Image (cartoon, rainbow over all chains, first blue to last red; front, side):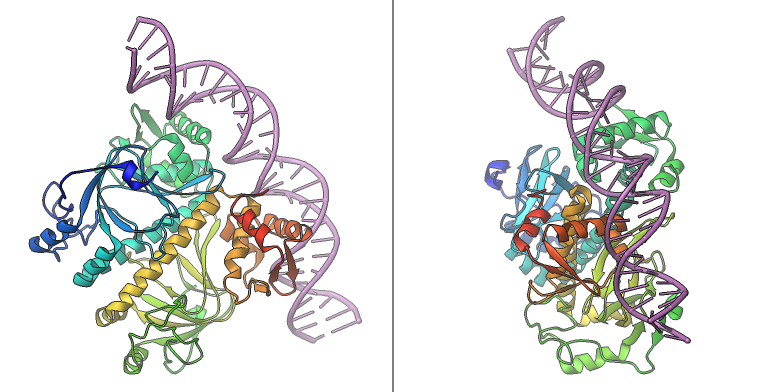
Length: 251
Length: 251
DNA sequence: GGGCTGAATTGATCTGAATCAATGCCTTTT
DNA sequence: AAAAGGCATTGATTCAGATCAATTCAGCCC
């Protein structure tokens, strides 16, 4: 289904999610969500200029807004919610290549076609702007380009880790690695870790089946590595052992 | 083993491999190997300046020049030969995340540690320069940064393809995909495709074992999909069927 | 040419995860 | 509260690819 059918458009153009507003201080267009330090290369006037060309869009759970193989016309900046990115084979086999949340940029393709699809896990808000606009933006703000390069480098490192996981780790090691990846999203490692995606999504991310993910989580519960809460949460109760398992140092 | 022990240094500093010289026209520092069009943003004077800070190094087959987890001090530009990039688990399981050849940049890490190791497959020549120097270079030549971003985007696409392969493809589909990836390195798809890496490297790249790679290639030979030549070459004789196989459209 | 060495092939068997098959458990709807 | 539907869990069985085990082959060095 196309963007137009999948998304409800807000009537009025909205501001990009940048510094200030309801975001934490230090976050801005050129920093992306994972910025650790303040990066204030874009001032309020710039923001106002940028916002003119961006349209905020609401994407309902389960709707896709990037179609693998479709012409890559737009850039996206996720302003809230969770997204899954994936590639598929003709017979329906699917590999989720990553999950993206608030602040992430999507659509940074060199090719004219999107190399992956993107689908909302929960309700997602995102800002869309054209690739042409993005190019002008990069000309105006060279540090945006530098930031995107840093972002791409980080994703490349994550991709390499995932290749190691998919190519060489056992089911238990995969699930352990996944949980440790998710626990970094919360402030305190001993609090509940939200897993907004379904078992099916986890399976397609880890190169396993739903059943194996489920069995493995059950095994971790009986081994007292984790407790499994209601409503898509997990709490890690044996962090050290889970780390050892994820690194392939234990059975 | 460290860089110093692994590499023989040339006595004199050498020029970077850029436009002209023994490279094809259109290749230059800011373009990298895969550039399809001419990109002459760096002139001869610039090249002379850059060359002052680069040292060309010779790496013998099987020697590693980037150690996973070691401090990321340098950038590398491969000027000839083939390199494998990999990550490893403590027990020795290994995943090759990619192969790099002439023109490739290595060491573009945000972290202070290298996220992967790099080892020479055959005799490799490369230019090394410090990350500090690379940063200055990017300040001087903004289009270098843009080119690196494009390069990183392409690698990200390749990484996503590899995740699909590792997570969801069968052994036959993996080997077929690999051969089609390698055939793009040669001018004519019906000529011999060089496979400079060992079966073990292929296995570690495809998430398989040596035996499965060998068996699968033998099967492809009996199915008249390929002929297997002497000295690490393969010739594709049924391109269409191989494509269908790689895409998961056939058994 | 004749051994030597490491890589590659081929065969036999085993196993971790997939597949097939119920069953259980929330959430939504009426 | 009951029905319905989707997701998750658990069990039984199968199978693709791993593992274990010989050969065979290709360089290489004398």
